[in-house]
Structure formats: structure tokens, C-alpha cells
Image (cartoon, rainbow, N blue to C red; front, side, top):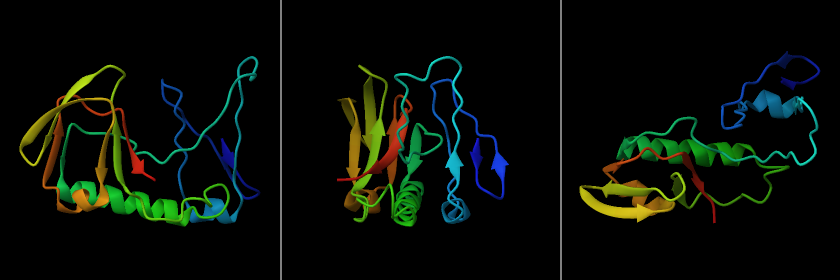
Length: 146
């Protein structure tokens, strides 16, 4: 759950153990806490925070990618202060991850390339990109922070 002195609300997690926490300025102002309850021992468990798109697609148009980049940049800017005090620069672009050992055909503006591993697109390239598609949907879309 996530709670403050004024409220408490349950959170859900995915099959892959991903917990999605809503970002709301009120949560930050009220110093809301994430409460974790473990079945059994919590020894060896940890929690990390990363800004990610909730869902990924196999195809994007440039306008959608620019919108995602702007939203992620604004979100990281709004999270300034603990624990995000080190991320004061604008994002460097977008970062896409795929399943381990996956070979993916990536088509940028009609040109296809084969890739294995993550793909990073610089902010300057996102600004001019018209289309982007993948033969396999990315598992993660996150901001690229240098």
C-alpha cells in the first residue's frame, strides 16, 4: 500500500514483481510511504525505483515518442530532491530493452536494422523521428539518463 497521515490505498504488482507507484505532487508533499508486506522472509529482498512507460508498443510515431520523452523529463524534474537529487539534467533520450538474447528488427523512418540488446535513441533523434517499429515489443521503455 501507499499511505500518508491522510490516506492509505492499496498498490498492485505484476507477475514479474513490478510495482507501479502513481506519481502525484500531493504524495510527495504529504511524505507518503510505500508499505511492503512480504510472505515469509524478506531477507535478500530489495526495492529499486525507475521511471518506465507502463506499457510498450511494437510501433510508435514520432509525435508519441516526443510526448513520452517530454512526460518522462517533466516527471524526473518534478521528482527533484531525495532520492532523485542527482538527475538535474534533461534526459538524454529514450532507452528500449528487449528480452535477453532476443534478436530484434528495428525500423527507424523506414530503414531496418537488426539489433541484439538495448536500443538508445538520443533526444535530438527523437525530435526528428517520424516512425519507429520493432519485430518484438520492448519489455522496457525508460528515459535515457547519462
